[in-house]
Every structure is written in structure tokens, then in C-alpha cells.
Image (cartoon, rainbow, N blue to C red; front, side, top):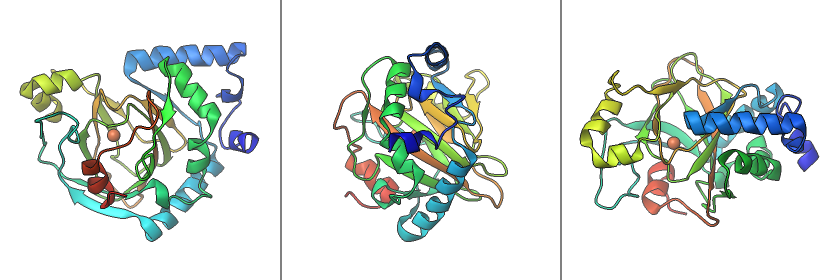
Length: 262
Ligand SMILES: [Fe+2]
């Protein structure tokens, strides 16, 4: 499994199998520095073209079999902050394929279960990392068509790996406010400035690019995905991780994203 999984990625450029080598150490050191400075890393061309093609193929067939289409508003904290129900007034619109409906043949599953990817994330974040125990949200494939967007939110999981499989014609940009959780919780004005894209509170931007792996700490940096435009859907897989084992989403979030709790 591991040798075959390695072939899903450009391991010449990204030596996940050889992190102890000089090249491997340099790669991790760079990634760690960028992660601490920017709150995320984006590895362009991480997935081989054949891998993104297979992810897209399975995403579209899994969407037909088990995708959950939803539209609705949400608390940006997903009810993880007592007494808070802070909403932007925008709607989420997208289709999610929950973990239990992702084909066993999709590279998304092999990559999520791959220990070398877990070792790499552990080295970058500098602490223990475990896969989520959530039956539906551990890994999710998202399909966003013309007009679809993800509203502003903080992830429940500490770390997310995004696998960009297909870029839309335009839009579908990940916008985030670096380490904004405490600010947003304390200060309604900080929240308003971020969601209004006030130039005084600059946001960081990451467009979708097929083949890119993104690692980000989505529970501390409020983020959204801007509306997708055009006939080509944005297709992305999100793999989630936490510093403690056995972590799951809450019922509110499962019902919002998947329309069911189990
Ligand atoms: Fe997120």
C-alpha cells in the first residue's frame, strides 16, 4: 500500500518517504517555517496528474451515489464557543461527499490512511497528529458548482489537508484571516472587518490549483472559499487531523454538512 501510495505523489519533488535525508530535512524545515509564518503551506504539483484525474472521476460518481447538497447559514464557530452564534448572513452552498460515501478506490482514502503523510504533518506542525475519528467528516470531498461558496468559519478540526483536484474557471479562492480566532471571539468589530474585507485587516488568498496539497490550521484562522464561477466545478478533498486521538465533529456540524448525524 505504501509503495503504491507513494506513486500518487511527485515524490521526487516532495520526498515524504525520505524525510531523514538532507533533501528531506530541508523540505520539512522550509515547510515548518512557512507554516508558522503564513498559517498554511501549499505544495504545488504534489499530486500527479493521474491522481487528480482519479480523484475527480470518483468525486463525480460518489456525488451521484451519496453526495449531500446543502444550502444554509451557520455559526462561524460551529457551536464550539459557548453562548456564541455568530453568523455572516451569507449562505453555504455546495455538495459534500462524506467519508463513508467516498469510494474505496479513490486516492483520497489511500492518502488519508497513508502513514508517511501523517509523519510529514507531524514534522511540520511540531507536535502529535492523529486522524479524526468522525465517521462522516474525517475526510470529505467537496464539489462546488457555479455560484457555490463556503461561508466564513473556523474548522472544528485543528489541521486540515486540502487536496485540490480540479480548479474552477474563476473564484474558488481560499481567503483566510491569520490566527483570528481570539480576535473574532472578543471583538464583533474585528469580525465585521474581516467579513467586509476591510483593507485595514488584510486577508490572505490562495487560489485553487489542480494538484496542490494545502495544510492549514483552520480552527484558528477564520476562512472561506469565494463563490465559484463558470461551468467547471471546483473539486477538493479535505482530510482532517487533531493533536488528540479520537476527536470528532459535533452533531450540529454533521447535520449541517451531511444532513444526518451518523
Ligand atoms: Fe474549513
